[in-house]
Amino acid sequence: MADINLLQNKLGSSTADIKTGRLLDRVEFFTAALLILSIFIGAGFLGGKVYLQRKEESFTREIVARRVELEKVSQERRDKAVTVQAEIKNMNELLPHHLYWTNMIKSLNAAAISGVQFTNITATGDGNVTLSGLANDYPTLAAFIKKLNETKYVDQVILNSSTLSELTSRVFYRFTIAISFDPTIFNYQPQ
Image (cartoon, rainbow, N blue to C red):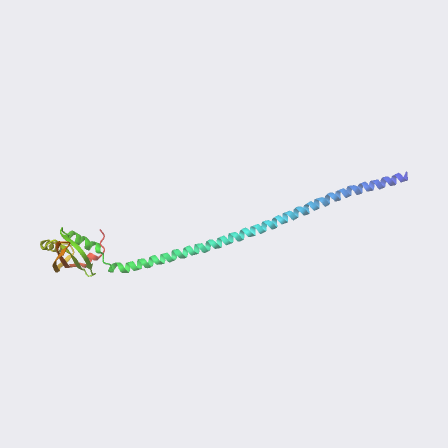
C-alpha cells in the first residue's frame, strides 16, 4: 500500500507538474505573442515615422519651392511697379513739352473749305505752323487764308509762297502758309 501511496504521490506531483507546465506554456505563448506584437507595433511605428519624415521632407520641399516662386513673382511685380513708376515720371516730364496736335488740327479743319488740300503740316512748340497744300484757284486760297485769320487761337497768317502747278492735267495753286497759333493750343485741353 505504501507503494500505491508513493505512486499516487508521484502521480499527484506529476499532475501538478503538468498543470504548471501548461501554465508555463501559456505564459510563454502569451509572452511570445506579446513580443511578436511588440515587434510589429515597433515596426509600424518605425515605418510610420519614416513615412511621416518623407512626407515632411516633401512638404518642406514644396514650401521652399512655393516660397521661391512667390519671391520670383513678387520680384517681377516689384520690377514692373518700378518700371511703371519710371514711365509715369517720364510722362510727367514729357507731357508739358508735348505738342498736342489735336486742337490745332481741329482749328485747321474748321477753317478748311472746299477746293483746298493739305499736303504737309509742320509745327513747333512755340505755336508756329507751316502748312503746304494745293488750291483750285487763287480766290479759293484767299478765302481759306481769310477763314484761317478768323479761327480761334490763330494770331497771324502769312502766305509764304504761291505758284501755279499742273498735276494730272489739272492746274492748281501750290502754296505754303506760315500760321502763328497761340501756343496754348498745343497744350492738352480736356473736352
